[in-house]
Length: 360
Image (cartoon, rainbow, N blue to C red; front, side, top):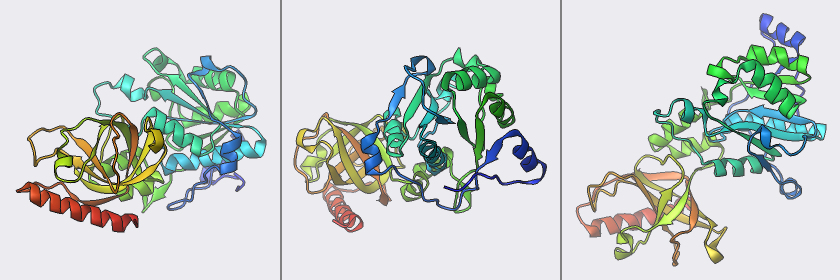
């Protein structure tokens, strides 16, 4: 790993040198992000604590990052990569301090905030990246009153006792987001931990962030979203009873009752289904799918957005099974068909095209 000797820009860089803050090297276009090896995953299991008050032990030389990490996209992964590598180098532990529910859920309850993953999905992704522990602090209106000084000195320093802290370039904390990067970098070295500010990661000349990914999904740009996420977008939920019309036209579907709060724009996509739990012999299996997202305009005038996945070359009953659906590419937009026969013919073409794209 590269030494963090900072990127100095005039007086800001010189100040960083004297107060112990380090600025990680600026990210490159479409960075390669480290994944935990199979051997690492065998010898470690991520620990989840429901707040600092739930901690049952002291961490060993903890290297800490802080944030919500919605989507765990490439920008987040750049930070986590550094945290995990530094913890390994120090023979310590990599730790994320996050908040559940998302603070905006509490502070702006009427805002239309749609998170990119469920909390369970986020934990699974973080574990796959090699993280050792997550502290998920319960966030409520009382916690929102915590001052920046209390946040640093009581929660971070006394609660977690990190030796190093890594944060993103836009990090704020404490009541009304009053806590600034300057305050953290000034107080950290006095309390015994260094602070490294990780610059933004850019892809195609633009910053990677959750808002940009949501906008791409809303326009059907799942391949571009996958580039920013570092993996295909994935929706999770149970297979629910539908109207069984797919069976009548020769293409039965698994109808997703999504736990995930967002789906891509209406259209037809190809990807894979993973049976997460409750599938018996199919549990853990990954199967190719063609998924329609839309309002099913051919059959009725309802406005419920639904995801219906046809599993290619599969026969069986998946009702009640929890599944993951990945959206790896878009085949076409949503269409209205004049007849059931026209719909059947188009679905057959969609399946054929999906076979080509998925190399089945």
